[in-house]
Length: 164
Image (cartoon, rainbow, N blue to C red; front, top):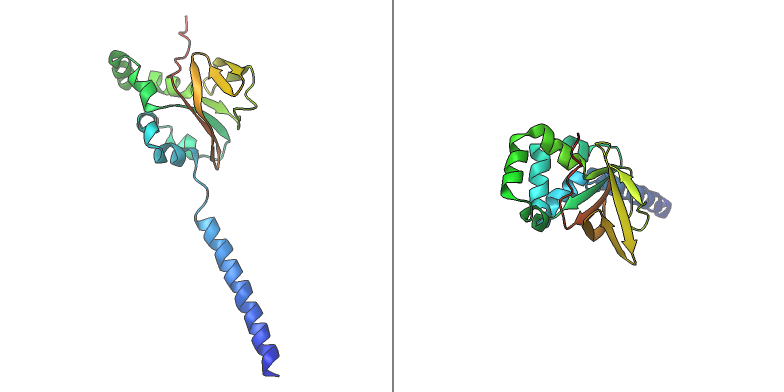
């Protein structure tokens, strides 16, 4: 009769091990949008500005978002005076960065003709084969997954329209 006990204990051990392993997966969840931006060296300027604007909590939240993420080269193309003015005006900085955030998960393949940003502005999009443009910017790396959304790396900083 010792064998059935070993078999039973072996089964219990296997179940316990499986439960522990599934628990480990929940301890290391998929990265958030904030984590995804922070992990990519080519997005360091955007990550710094998102932190400066106080948008990290939004990027860590549960709401699904799509971030149109200008890479560092895109920020280098913006005149220094413009970047300095944004740094000095938190509300304007938040508006410019919000112009790069769209509600919901939007894949590059399913990009509609227009997307509405979190600030209420619209961005016209276009497709030519596998290339997707957003106004004057092009998606250079599409569909980076995050637990709470998607990131598309773009090659230009999109400035919101000037309110009159």
